[in-house]
Image (tube, rainbow, N blue to C red; front, side, top):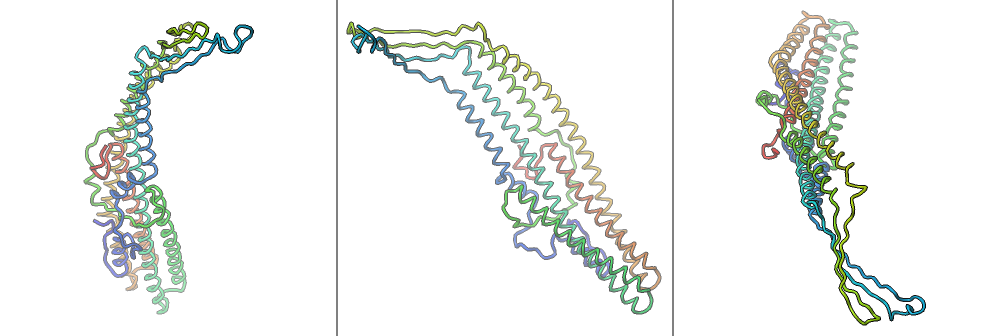
Length: 419
């Protein structure tokens, strides 16, 4: 159902029918951009979506690197040459070539892989949550663009009504049934309506620019689908807190625990094994050399890093509890606002706007017949304009509240994009 319904009587009917359209004369031949299409497009081409994707790829690279083993080392050592007396030249030189291999002890490699993998899973969950945030931002921008376009149509309709009333008043003034002051007042109302229409058009362009920036489009080459209130009541149901948010909270604890495990393994020193051949020029002989280097953990047992990692793990557990409670509170608040906003829209749809439209119809007939004063007609005109704008604001608030509720519940406009 389109957001605006037609009402009866002359220019009022024409204006209200125009309100059912997003633009009275579309500048583009393509169908209007729906919120589902906007969200899908943002996920595919928005710079922020690409940024999130590259973050995940970066963590995948770190997982790959975490599994790498230490590189072997090749040593070449020449001794006892180019000295004094009998050590001049290379006749008594000793040349040693060896291969050294660092050996990680204490399970460092496994802990390093586990930490990197946990961080990768956390990044994926955070990415899912961030994509829901992107969905919310796009939906909010789409709602505001649709509201601005509908507001422009409201302004155009109000301008049409103001011109019609100015014409009616002018005829009555010419016939001597109204003082010239009424003509001045009607002209002022019409001028104000013209200014409001120009401002509304500018706001329409501005909101589309903001939406295009979120979508990653260089130009505004689209129009947005109008707000529709018929689906609001269907969108109100039972939800649970967003899965990506809670999953990220759990994985954050796991990642912190893996970092603690890694810190504990690093207190175990690594050893360095070497094996090589020594050439003794004076004896014209060769000999094997072998060695092992073992650091002695006298001053550094990685105690500070272990304490820090343990504190981070406890902090992650507290943060998980906080995030769970915040997610539940966010959903409860968003649900309450959404239900109230949907009820408010229904009230304006069924009572307020129809009543204001009927009041203007009666006031116009009565004024034309000389039974109502001009002030009653002016009040009815302003009352209908205010009712329509309040209805538009209510629809905007309901759409924004439902978008926030879906974000808190982890929903997207398109089921195939569910995390």
